[in-house]
Image (cartoon, rainbow, N blue to C red):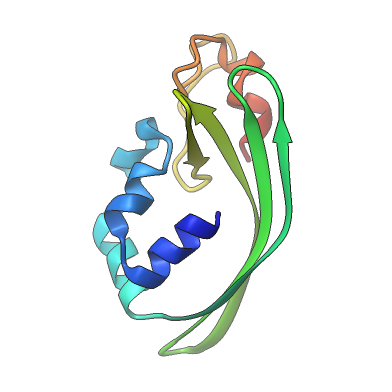
Length: 124
């Protein structure tokens, strides 16, 4: 989570896309991410908790508060983000991009498990 926050601060849009679950990347608005990153003054990140669950693949939650200032004032956002580790890399499961998978379909994270046995319990 800290690396993704830092990427927003530094305007590293490619990193933000590369650390999002690959099947969700096409649903992200690169230009909107770039604009939000560039037009915000980032004020800080507080990680409240991080939980990692065993298994193959590993899943985790990070609860955080991000603060920033933009043209309309100062803001804060509290979120409990979901992550999955696939092929040795952690990926953000973006709640704004629906995972189109039925319970018995292959999991979109690429684990070769059924969605219901893998990421279904870790998405919004």
